[in-house]
Amino acid sequence: MDWLRRNHPDVNGVVTATRGNHGQSIAFAARQLGLRAVVVVPHGNSKEKNAAMRALGAELVEHGQDFHDADGHADELAASRKLHRVLSFHPRLVRGVASYALELLQAVPDLDFVYVPTGWGSGAAGLAAVRNALGLKTKIIGVTSSEAPSYARSSAVGRIVDVPARTRIADGIAVARPHPGAFELVRNEIERVVEVSDDAVEAAMRSYFRATHNVAEGAGAAALAAVFEECTQVAGKRVAAALRGAMSIRISILESLGRDRGRSSKVGRLLLLPEMQVQGLSSHKRKGTGESRNEQRDNEHKLGSQQQPCENLL
Image (cartoon, rainbow, N blue to C red):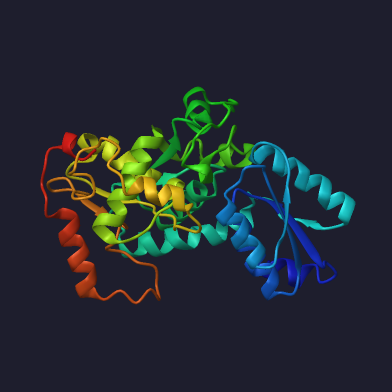
């Protein structure tokens, strides 16, 4: 947005499409720069995320049944209202997303694996760019919902495959097909793509909250769900799971997280396997969060104190 203001000072408004997180960032940045922001979401989008975008000054437009419908309508509004089209995937946006990858990989340069939620592809692209720039050997594992598996299926066959998204919890990665540009950028940079169920994502959300007191939205907890799923494969390795924040979580979802849903009572007690270090869950915080070293050590102790077999995690 700063680039837009400096290079196109005549622009007085922007339009974008989102399921919530990207839209909130655009609304926030637009207001800081005195720009009008129009954000398109599909019908049935999170009421809380919609309210958050409106609170940040965005004009919210509901259109279509999924992200792709909303994205197409944003193109139409850009033309009809003469607004600057802010794409939901763009190299300049990737540079911003990559800032967390730079902080993580500079703080923990000897990671073996990083698990990253993968929807439109910005997170994976940013991680790959930083890893390559730093000359590291860290392997990137993409994570999708098994109810929105287009990225996994596309990676498996080497071409874009459309699969309707039906996830009830991981709306932040609910895409029916990868972004073509992002897919070409990361298809050879990702080691593999793991699919996780909605139940596994909810279990990971509970684990985050119980062990670290971080509230993760569904898409944000998908990476940890994948670590749990592949725990035998990464035992003894240094592993990071990218946690995206709560943003806005429905009260009904929070209530569901308070129920065991028939799961083992051990959920949330164990995030670390024997001799396995999961960096980035709580031991690495973004700059300025104010977490002390003692708090970091306490969280790491809670994460690793219960050494149970892999099958007891979920």
